[in-house]
Length: 248
View (tube, rainbow, N blue to C red):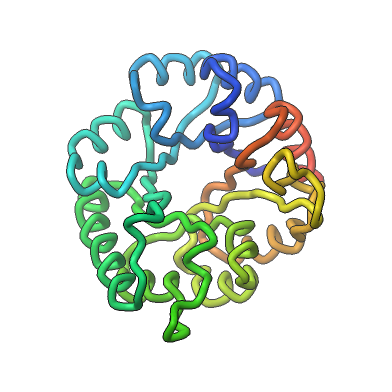
């Protein structure tokens, strides 16, 4: 049986963190994934994880922190027992507007990979939707990133690929050998769950997760991470989503 993980960003509106850990233990999770909002006290967080039988093998760190404070990243990752580090996002105001810019960003990720892989970590990029929207010359930012960063791993956020207009099966086919982690997230039918930004609990939306899970078994993916960007009830999301994937 797969040990499923949970992106803690999903519960950012339901503090405190220790309560989230208890909720996840109660619902059968073995792992969590961290994001910037939970790094204030790594030692205390590690104790709370241990108390609930949870591990934190993966974490998100901003490009600024990754490039400017690598030792801080390594200290946090080490204290929390991480195995993989992912750059999760690029803010709108610093996103490149052309192919050359995206290639240059890929080169920055490749340089970060050299730093963190030397320290023993998997290092990769976590996508959103904007990487799958064609530039004026019809090139795709995600392909430009991969071409310029041949060594980096990929944390594939399947639902964002779909929202960006991409075919996840095609991308898994072309770049599946790079996938070390997957965000397991669902998209509500058009017009539904507007109070949750159009996302859905896994198995309650439009994404064919059963077929995707079968396809992903042919990749080196190690971590399946449940995520909902804005649930109105995080325990409902956590409970229903893990029940869905355990039924496959």
